[in-house]
Image (tube, rainbow, N blue to C red):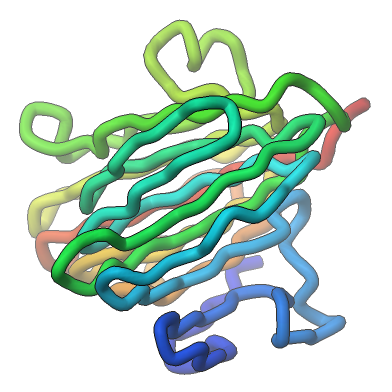
Length: 238
């Protein structure tokens, strides 16, 4: 099963300072048929105006990943963390037992980002935050695990999340083809960031998405110079 959803079909909520597009039900957008995809609960496509952002607010029992497409976002939390995540990089926050944080676009330009929420494998745990650069340069033209709930990936450099899931990312030059096997039972949600790719014959433009189940492998070809991310996630076995 491969279901495509183009960017123009996403729910659009206008907050003036924030233009939000929702892949799944979130906030003012409610669609009981789109409550998530397996343990992937939220995928928001946000455009944040300069010198604005999300004031201090709380989360718990959710793995929250932010991938910045343009501009930068500045994070602060009640654990004492502060960090500026630039375009093309990714940050993670395990909300655990509870965390308060803010995210602001302190730049002079608009910030565009994807925010992804994944349900944790179990409630609780000490909250934490971290960030990492997206694969570019020598790391281009191959998939890289950016965040993972599996020890072997974290030991190899992936950011830690507390979910049975992995976040992959890649930048591909035009004409490059890569293949990725999909494990049984996985929910895969892929979203283009720049350029166009062809996934198992389905063309995906920037900000378009594919929901994928019961497919043994992904064949991904760059139609243009392209960038994309996807989550591969499993229902918690706990």
